[in-house]
Image 1: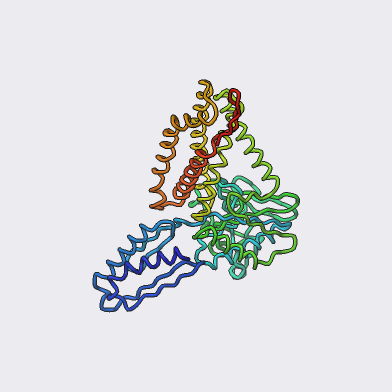
Image 2 (image 1 turned 90 degrees about the vertical axis):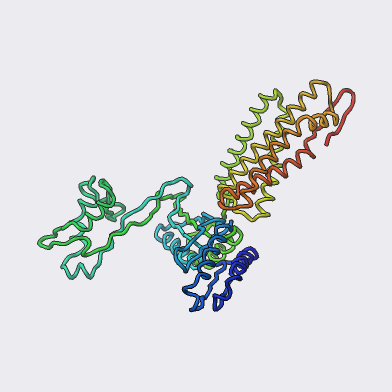
Length: 445
């Protein structure tokens, strides 16, 4: 609310030099629907330059404002910054024993979600993976009244068009569980095929007709695959909400609380990277994480010719996670592709810094320098390289945070900056290990 109100006040300040050209203006600010501003121009200024100067100033201000979706319209061509700062792809999982009931439940949820202007799109046919291709189907809606006027029935029409429904299948139909399904093929160019299909003259007995005379043909998105597990169907809904993740989660949860759920169906909403979902998926992720850490440990062990020192390198990874989580919580960002990519980048830099320090530590050990004195030497010889690597990376990403023109790069920059800054501080303080010197024992910090 504070950020939205701040942006609205910026536009009010921009309008102040042109106040004499307006009858009045009003601003409505809402936590869920954002801010809406209306400026009412005086009749005598409709053909003057001041309203148009303000119009272009407002567009310029909208272009400079990051982490937001702003549209300016009313005088000439409008302007919109699109989905910047939006919370994209919040996913809701549905499970149920009836495919039709699950589809009706998804449509009900979509209708309720779209009541909020911040909801840009609700996809009830979302695929389970990020890269799964979309699939579309043709829907032929026969008009019973027009069929009656032409003395036709549905069976006669379907028999007349079945060869065109699937040109690669002579019958053009499939019998499944006692229900006859008609298939539509795309062996020709799509646009030409649609036009030819609805306008071609057809005959049923002695009656001539076209599909366009008795029906409408539409193209709709559908599920790319039907998932059924343990005798229950699964369906995923994707909600694109324009706003901070906290508000998106709060709104979606409030809508789901009001949705009547059929018997045997369930709704699961976790949202975000850290929502693992089912226990089997959690086990797979944990196994993948374990194999990744094991691979890193084996590679670093081979390079350093030691099994103990690589453990220190791996223990530096959680230090970067602390900074990543602090940055994500402080800036209230959605942990999606940008943040995940930033986390991987931060972890890579932190591991590289740790390897530099441990390698220098091994060199000191070979020279007979142990204990706290060795770490003083390590920091003196290698901390400059570590600082240069971290600070140049942070400095290069700061403009992305200040400008905030793109959500992906903004989230990536925030996560990397916080991850490197916190991990660098903690590495300096906590990099020491227990070590036994010649005739004495020292504790290093």
